[in-house]
Length: 137
Ligand SMILES: CC(C)(COP(=O)(O)OP(=O)(O)OC[C@H]1O[C@@H](n2cnc3c(N)ncnc32)[C@H](O)[C@@H]1OP(=O)(O)O)[C@@H](O)C(=O)NCCC(=O)NCCS
Image 1 (spheres, rainbow, N blue to C red):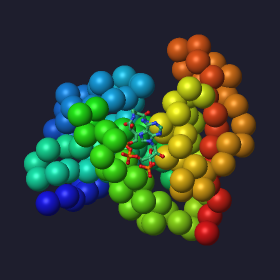
Image 2 (image 1 turned 180 degrees about the horizontal axis):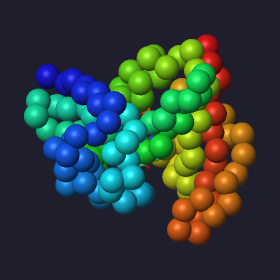
Image 3 (image 1 turned 180 degrees about the vertical axis):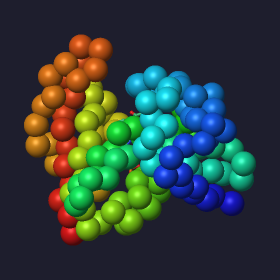
């Protein structure tokens, strides 16, 4: 069975899942920084497949971090996860940053009508990122 869990603020145990399962998936260090933001986990039985951390301010949502465990990538889980998430935040404008060379993620976001609206120079570790936005429905 595939299911999602939601945490408004990560508990210690969830932070451990993030750190131990997804560090190889995330471009950012998965440390306490993300603890204070809402996070969804996608599970297959008891195996964590993916995570999505976001921030919500008024009518805007910012996807801060999103990943599917390497061994489960390319099997449609990212699409499924994002579809579910977006369905629940349809009424908000959604923003994210994605490295300019992350073709996989950019393709995925474009599928869900995210548009490139700018470039963030030196976004992280000297690499530039696109700012992408999906308008509220
Ligand atoms: C980006 C990521 C979340 C996608 O998840 P995934 O489960 O691998 O993706 P899916 O199998 O659901 O594929 C979804 C879409 O992504 C794109 N995609 C997937 N694999 C791709 C590849 N090898 N090359 C180009 N595009 C690809 C396609 O548009 C695909 O849709 P399609 O199958 O209808 O053509 C995942 O690869 C990941 O965790 N990457 C590392 C972390 C990361 O980059 N996160 C995003 C930070 S902004």
